[in-house]
Length: 91
Image (cartoon, rainbow, N blue to C red; front, top):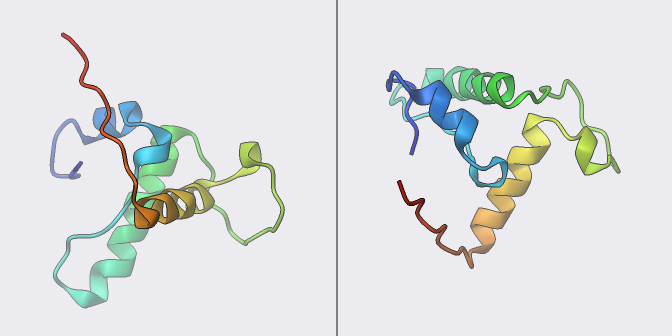
């Protein structure tokens, strides 16, 4: 879990695997959830160098995917389960 309250959150987002990142808001004010989630989506997109789609296009090559489509795939993979543990780096 990477939280934007961490002073290192931008560095952590940069090094996490593109296929393992999801975004959410842990805000408790229901009226702010969408805005806060969109803020985090924009932050991830900026750091990863992904555009944020303004509309949905079918049949794009993966190299043309934006942040929303990438995160959608990540969520579908997460939802399906069968995850494997990543090996820990030796320092």
